[in-house]
Image 1: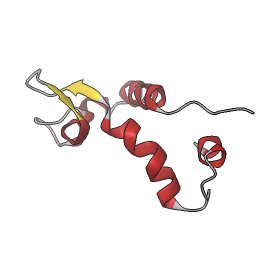
Image 2: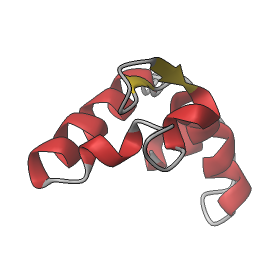
Image 3: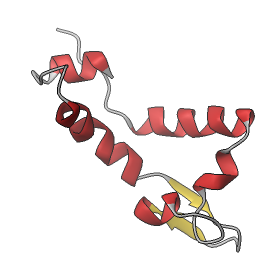
Length: 79
């Protein structure tokens, strides 16, 4: 994250810099809620049974969620 913020010329000590990078990734996450209905965006983060984020609360689930978030993050640009 730090390198993405730096390469974009953003201020690394400002929360808004990270928000701009993370917002897209966090709103693109997809999963299924407790009823098996696909949810994305804000709905993904809702509490069960409407949302899907709760299904990632175990250690293994957190690793999967981290991997999903990383897939959505922009690549670090190296000059």
